[in-house]
Amino acid sequence: MPRRPNYDRDDLIERARDLFWQHGWAGTSLKDLEAALQMKPGSFYAAFGSKDALFELALDKYASDGAARLGALAAKLGPLQALQQFPAHVITNDDAPAKACMLSKTYLELQARNHPLARKADKNLTKMEAQFAALFAQAQAQGDIGKMHDPQKLARKYQSDLLGLRVTAERNKADAISIADDLAADVKRLSETA
Image (cartoon, rainbow, N blue to C red; front, side, top):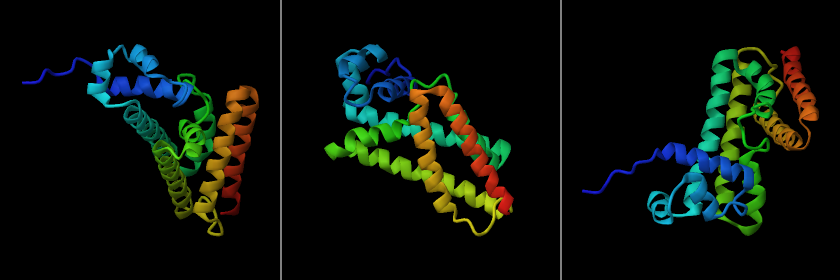
């Protein structure tokens, strides 16, 4: 009978996510992962198979955690208020190892190599955009924004602005906070045309 592993797989994936998020795919070596996860090479390969397999798990963890945070914010505040507060929420999270989005960082790093992980990052970015569109559509259905707005188009612009904001936050937190306030005001203004 095989021995049961004596580690918390979710914790290891979370630690790997933070390392990959901070240093990227190329900037994170197997030795870095083994040290951060406190695993020997044999245990690492038995648990995850490869660096790419672990990176994919880390990307999925990043995406699902972000979707859950936004979903919880929407459940608490409603869709429009959640969209207003989310920009400030992501750039002021002091527990995050980086301010820039891990999905966009991965896509930019790996798409020129035609690496499968770039396609995985792109799929997760598309899901994120769909979540934003769903929240704009909910706000529209509730009468919080006017019918003349296209939720999909709003979501694309919102995601683009949010990704740019997160890069700015890497460079200058004070500027990013001011821009996050502007993004919140832009979303709030949508309610003025309801």
